[in-house]
Amino acid sequence: MIFQTLDNKEECVGVFLNGELHFNTLPAELSRTWNYSSFLKERDGIDYAFLYAQKDLAEICPRHLEAAWDSVNDRLRAFLRAFKASKINLDKNCFFDLVPQRFLKEYCLVRNHITEYVLENYHKPSNYDFLVDLSKVLHEMKFRNLNIDKAELRDFMHEQRTRKFVQKLNQSSLSCDYNIFGTKTGRLTTKKNSFPILTMDKRYRKILKPTNDWLVSLDFNGAELRTFLSLAGIRQPDVDVHDWNRKNAYLGSGTREEVKERFFAWLYNLESQDHLSERMYGKNRTKVINEYYQNGNIKNPFGRSIPSDEYHAMSYLIQSTCSDIVLRQMVKLNDKLKGKESFVAFCVHDEVVLDITDKDCNMVNELIEYFSNTTLGNFQVNVKYGRNYGDMRQWTQ
Image 1: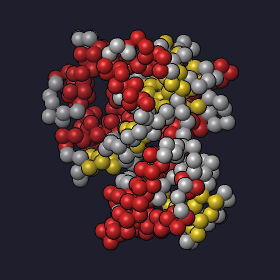
Image 2: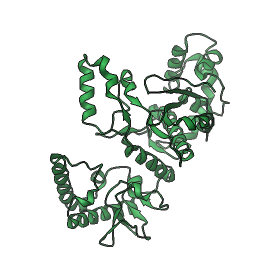
Image 3: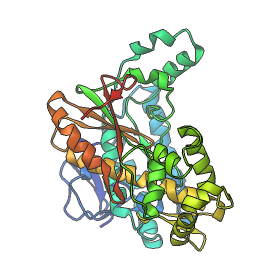
Image 4: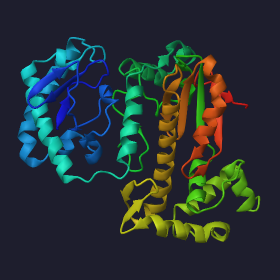
């Protein structure tokens, strides 16, 4: 049955079902709703309309419901402005305790209608189960504050941009609030009031410290090149893949960075005729693009479909596949750490950062192996660790 959640925090259990509000105890017959909430983490088999539509309620609202939605949404925004003016922190209060129950019912009823419309008119994504799993992991991050030490910025406070950064921090959440559908390729973006983890100057990374004892960073060596090799059926080298490419494809000419730039300039431009690139990979590129690009759409190995012209097809394919690999491995690591004090702290593009206790350090090698074992083969992993995110050194097994 269609229902709506009244808050998205784990401790704020409340739903609207059959015209009534239910608190503290969840009814059994919950099957369809707009979006995931933390207190639903043990409930399987629920259809989330947001994951079907991949757009916000306002963007997807059908015309015949626009007036009703605008009315309840205007009242919602009025409540939120009042909370802000009164300095009421919604992270520490249940939303349904702060507004009249009559409004909750009216608001949820409109959401019910939009939910029903989406579920009846949109196809279920082929990667739906993964999107649910990813939503659960990202919700945990959203409601877990980072350990931020602003004192680490003291050496930069004479700079205007640092002072602007501090102002931004003061207006932002202390946690990472990611947007699953912020890009075509599936790479995460952050929402408006999130901690600016993806745009923060690297010099400021020292402000991020572990809640436990260590931060451990995992990212794939040459992730996009390895993704292409895998899709082309070429065996993964167990050394630095860009240096391997320099020696094998480009006959040892140029620096690692020059060869990396040259390779992707060729790979992502299907009209490029670079001789050495063509000699090594020309047939592979044609094979890969023919397999995954059809009828104006890229469909990557994980079922993600992206409308594309021919010019962008290869870049969308590689980048979306790479993003899906990283995020799926992050979900696996999160599952592996369930029940422990250590946890997945955040991700920055293709990098996943763990917050590890001293007692769980003996697990790190196992976690590295777990992360490297992807659906598309074993990818070599770069691993760093440190007492803050700015001072990270190479992990030695």
